[in-house]
Every structure is written in structure tokens, then in C-alpha cells.
Image 1 (cartoon, rainbow, N blue to C red):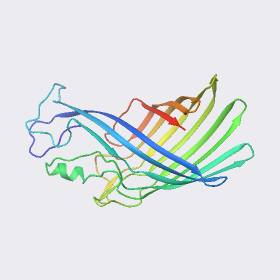
Image 2: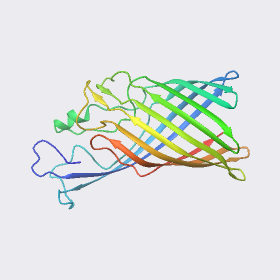
Image 3: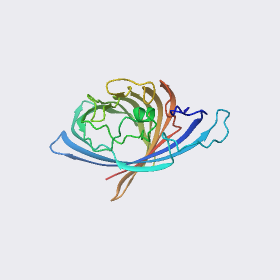
Image 4: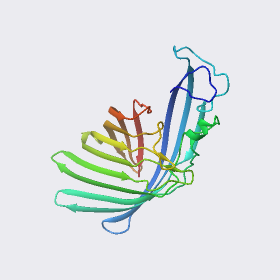
Length: 262
């Protein structure tokens, strides 16, 4: 990203590397045959490292502390989620749906673009949306010989702006996959995931930087294994195949998830 600090004479590039990790603690309980309740609390960590270069790609030291980015490590709770679950068997198919809402607990920031135009320090990382956002997901699965197939769709909608004037983009997901026993107690899964995020808004307007909308097509693969008396462990990787985006967006090479279910 090229700096546009007020009064800056020499333009320079920001080379930013982000490492994001999240610990999700989730609980689900059936309250009768079919329906149930679920609750999840995500704890998110972010490591930000920045390198400045001149336009020729040489190391550069800004004449004054940069207001946009800095080396830092952040750790905060993101927005928890609570949902009602419904599961039903229909012939060979198992159908499931969840209806929920996210709770605005995660840390939010004032408009970083407006502060940047004023030459003031600011923070781009939002740990929450600051709004109560409805959630919906539907899943269909069935066995097909030794293989299980499944499809799911998810929606997270932000219906209004928060107290800072920020309105996060809506999120949509579509997943198709298959699973089977890989030998012994191990199971393997694979498939495709399509994720869409609409543009964010500040004070009702879509800006010319920040999240201007993106769509990611990813290959997913994972393994899992039950462990006696401890539940099951799982490892999953998501590899981006194609990204369609507007403006400058974060590019990520790999997403890795480690899970434990009991």
C-alpha cells in the first residue's frame, strides 16, 4: 500500500504481513429430539509486522512515525454467537438448520480512514461489528456407499451501522464436500468452499479503500480421528484457488484449523 500521509514529500510502500489465529470455544446441547441450542465464543489473536520501502523497493525509514501501521500483537474476544438448531432425517438425507445472532462484544474502532486523512494514529483491525447480526445456516448430508456427501450454505447479515458509523459487509458461504474412512479410525474430508464478503461502509458510504468486497474459492481437505474417552481431534486446511476482489485486499496462502470435539 502506498502512503498518503498529509504533508509527506517522499511516497513509500507499506509491506504488511499478518498472522491471524483464533481459538473457538463452542457448546451445543439438544433439548428434545431434533431441536437444540449452540453457543460459541471466539478468541482472536493477530500478529502484525510492517516493512517500509521506497518506490524502488529499498528499505525506507519514514521521517515521522507512521500513523497507519506498526509492529504489534493484538489479542481480544471477538463477537460470541448463540443459535437455535434443528435437525431432521428425511429418507436417506439428514437436514439441519441453525438460526442465531452474534453478540456485539468484540472491540471496535473509530473510522481509521478519517483519522488517517487527519494525520492521526488509528487502528484498522476490528474484532467485532458492534451490532447484533443475524446468522443462518443450512446443511444437507447423506451416505453414498462408503462415502458421505454434504452441502451447506451460511449467511451473516449486518443490517445497520454501529456507534462509530461502521457497517461490516455481509458474509455468504457455500460448501460442497465428501467424507469417508481413510483407514482404521481415521476419517478424511475434502471439497470446495465459496466465500463472499460484501463491501464495508462508513457513515453510509462505500470508500475507495478498505474492504471493498471479495469472493474466495477455496479447496478444503481434512482428517479426523476419535480418541477413546477424549472425543475426537481434527485437522483441516483451506487453500485459496481463486480470489475476486476490488481494490487492495489481504492475500493469504493457507488457512489451517485444529479442532477437538467432546
